[in-house]
Image (cartoon, rainbow over all chains, first blue to last red; front, top):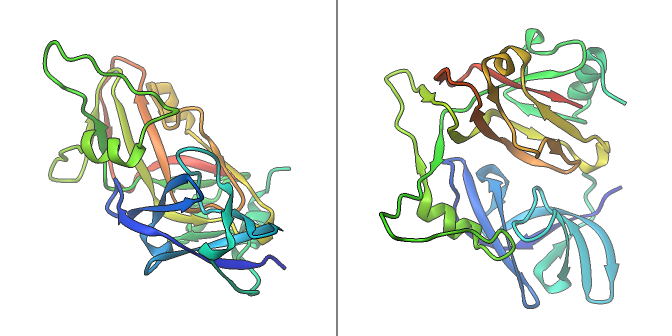
Length: 86
Length: 163
């Protein structure tokens, strides 16, 4: 079972009509990525939880960020964790 | 391992792969799924005028800001088509929304079609991997590497997904 979570993000229009840019801050690091509009739920997106380390959580995003890949560490406070299987 | 046609159909049935709209049987080949071209075409426009120097540092750019400023929609004809000329670079997407759930542990590669390659049309630039967990329409980085102008038609078969 893969744990899921909602990641709080800022949302803006993307380059394509069906696309949104979502942005979040993880400490001093700002991450942005394009996601399909159907994957934006208000001001959050669904992510997969990979690992925990104290107050940090390693997550898989639905696509690559512009500054790194799709797997990033975020503060737990950015997430609403659930236990629904993918 | 590459999924065969029967394995692709089973994976679609079991929701290990999600493609919307679902490919019709003729879009599933022996070892791939054909995907079609979306209806929006974008092109970088860095025409800054004479005497202005400009370069991009990939390690430092704010890509969304850059795209908002310089990535422009291409005008289409009455059928929604655009023409890609020699050396031009166009961004488009597949018409299909694709999801590879992490739980399926499946990844994929997007590849061109040989009939398009023979015309000089490439559909991706060194970024063919669709990782497990991906959700969205697949971005296509289209270039025309021949001297023949090539018409891009929304809904036409543009690439194949190998899973």
